[in-house]
Structure formats: C-alpha cells, structure tokens
Image (cartoon, rainbow, N blue to C red):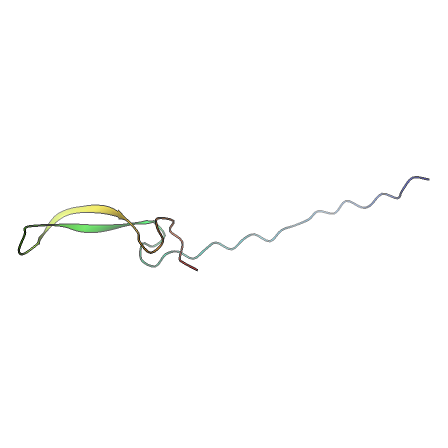
Length: 64
C-alpha cells in the first residue's frame, strides 16, 4: 500500500532586516578630509582626500 502524499506547502522566510547605517560615514564606507599644507599653520586647501571609515571599516554598517 503506497504512503499518502503530503501536501506541498510553500515555506516563507522573513526578510532579514537591513543593518543600520554607520553614523560617521552615512553608510558610504568612506569619509573625506580636507588637505592641509604647511608645517606651522596647517593651511586648509580646497582639495579633499578620501579615507576609509574607521568606525565601520568600510562596510557602511553600524557596529553591533
């Protein structure tokens, strides 16, 4: 005698919540800093350089 078939049910999984954005880099993973020149006064220029966010290590997600 064959076994009765089980009804096929669809399993649904809850979507994972998105991690919170890093407050320092706004979720970009990088920060910009003004370039300073000069030994004594450190005059700020119009140029900027990009640096890795040290809070989230470039992931863009807030630390747990």
